[in-house]
Image (cartoon, rainbow, N blue to C red; front, side):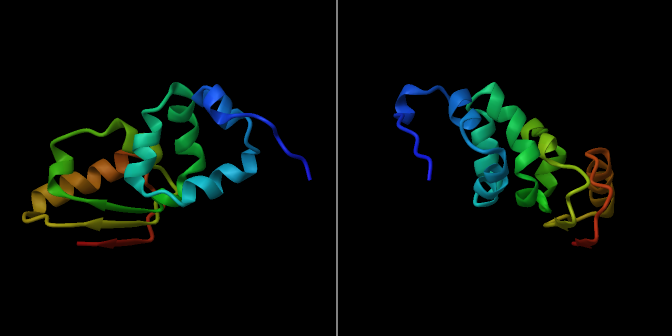
Amino acid sequence: MMTHDFDARDLNQDEIISRLPLDILPTIFSKLEQRDCITCMRVCRAWYTIIPEYAKAVWSTLRLYPHDLLRRNRYRELCLGSHVKSVYFSKFQNDEDLYRMMQKVIDWGCTHIEFMRK
């Protein structure tokens, strides 16, 4: 078994990720909530780039609300794509807003959805 003698406090965020085996990253990120992934993306440019690729399991289900029509979340948008399989539309009161939100989901590249629920 190989051990690494280093103190993580001496490394910057880019170096921490680069020292991990790539095959372990999806396992690490799968333990996070969606909001935690977004918080991690704000740490540094390397994490901003890596997390959308390795956290796909976290984003297989998407829950959307009417306020998501009003404010853009570029971090979330980077994490979305064809791996999104389920979408829940919560608290939508009118069909027009629901339709607009469905169109946004398609625009975000979520084209392989298997389940939707209002």
